[in-house]
Image (cartoon, rainbow, N blue to C red; front, side):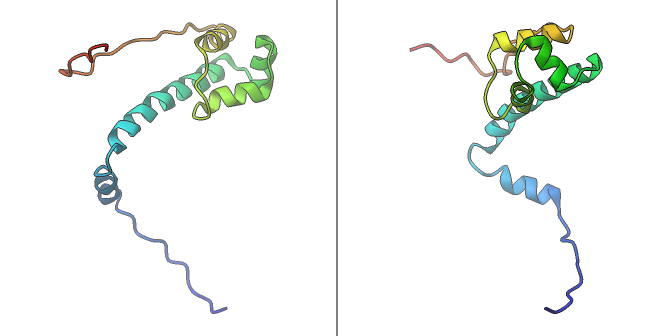
Length: 111
């Protein structure tokens, strides 16, 4: 095989973002994912601040380290509110859930 020198591709993130933002549903999916990733960052930061490992949190919650790993991975499944409360309790935190208005968008009527 010939020795072909490695040359990284130049990426223009602005062009890439403009391209994917045209995909139907992309912006909505990105906003939804942002909420989940924000929660994930908060879970990991709270555990770090508490100075606990996943194993230690699991022991205090009466569950397994793999269950805590799945909880902190977030994208696999949506944890129950009771699970989030137990996790927060172990870390010395409270869970707050807020409904935030979407600007000028009216509420959707119930059918």
